[in-house]
Length: 249
Image 1 (cartoon, rainbow, N blue to C red):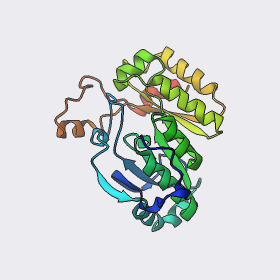
Image 2 (cartoon, rainbow, N blue to C red):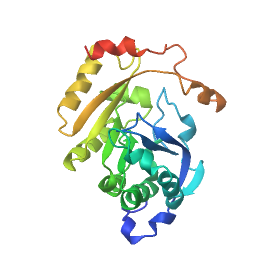
Image 3 (cartoon, rainbow, N blue to C red):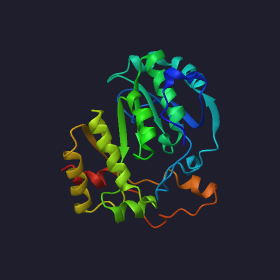
Image 4 (tube, rainbow, N blue to C red):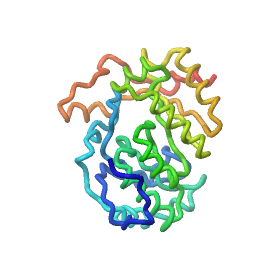
């Protein structure tokens, strides 16, 4: 396991990471228009994962921090001038899996481009990863997969709920704002009890700024099939936004 990463003590611009893909003008992963970077590597195996091709940390397009910064810099004005203030969001996979690269990238974004930084995460990774990444993070989008151990384990096929909750506590301790993202999955996370438990969790977190309820979709199903992996939710129908409106009423 690498140590805590201090970008000021290494050649951070030459740090390499395995990049799955990028989007130049994303608008749903944080405030304003954003450069969105997907990293490879993820310790969980969510039933509805949209990017199963990001699970393996050792594949992807190798890029240095300098190469990514150049791509972002070419579009910097779009982010600076966007309504709500734009910036850079790093997602995955689970971006904390590649925390040395993530740390150096976020540091470089702040130092060279002075842009807002955001990490979309399931709240996994080691304490070393958190201590490396969070000093350079302005916002986290935390994907909470379930509110009980049984539900969380069922959806992610791992036992990491406690880790996710500890990550939220770490954000609170550092006074880092976070947004809660919660997929409403029929028969799994859509009961009144599930929703009430989530709201209670968020209500008690002083740095949580919003909850986003996301209707279940099958946008990643074709990727499972291309990888030769059986999609586990064959009999679950996709939801429309109108079908989860009751949660906000």
